[in-house]
Image 1 (cartoon, rainbow, N blue to C red):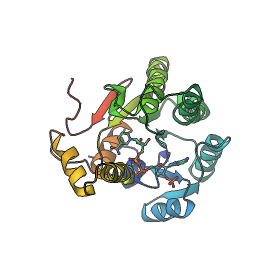
Image 2: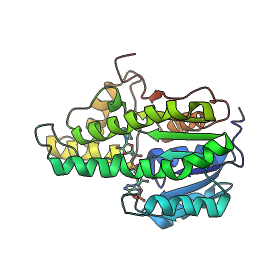
Image 3: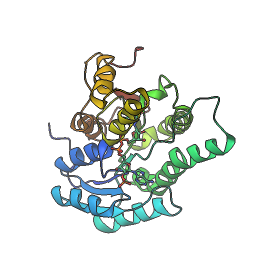
Length: 257
Ligand SMILES: NC(=O)c1ccc[n+]([C@@H]2O[C@H](COP(=O)([O-])OP(=O)(O)OC[C@H]3O[C@@H](n4cnc5c(N)ncnc54)[C@H](OP(=O)(O)O)[C@@H]3O)[C@@H](O)[C@H]2O)c1
């Protein structure tokens, strides 16, 4: 299927590896002009060089001024931003009993503040042009909070509440706003988590991964390309009547409908 986004300007935050990379590669394969971002400038440029039309930017999303730098770079390279994929680092783990007020500030600073700023920089243009796609890579924790990821649960729920409210406000302007919820897609982050569990429990990383995979109805972790394909569809011309929703890409892992 041709997704009808050739020539569109797409910004994919935190796309030098993992889920963001999967989304960026899928958008690039559809002919979108993609800005790859992450702290590793060389990696961003290397991925961009493999896509038909892309450029890479080394930027720390959590630094003040990063959203402006990202939007300015994309606009200068390709024109106004049509597709904004929000993504970034997850906060540190911890139980609800361990959370401090300072931790909450940091979770909002990582999971809400830069995302809202990015949206505010591109939204007027999208509405004026009558076409826009805003997609946030979140987590299935938005539906089913994950034990020991309290800060992630808090920050992602806050972002989801903001974006759902925004989706309604701009629905008549041709701008869709959605969430894509990954659950155990194999990336550097899941490998690091599995490795930490292996060290804590004295098992091998393969044993830990096999046990986690067995708990997923599909019996395996997802692949970033499977995830990227769903992301690209939600940013497509065809997904024009899909807004204000959360789509799961989790191998059936969340138990509720
Ligand atoms: N994989 C899953 O199953 C899963 C499930 C639920 C939620 N998530 C969430 O999805 C997000 C992406 O995770 P992932 O699994 O794709 O992990 P990953 O493979 O480790 O990728 C993380 C990406 O974020 C970038 N990044 C990290 N800190 C950054 C910063 N301060 N500024 C800009 N970019 C930064 C990294 O690039 P640089 O190192 O170049 O900065 C990299 O491109 C995370 O928030 C994670 O918690 C993942």
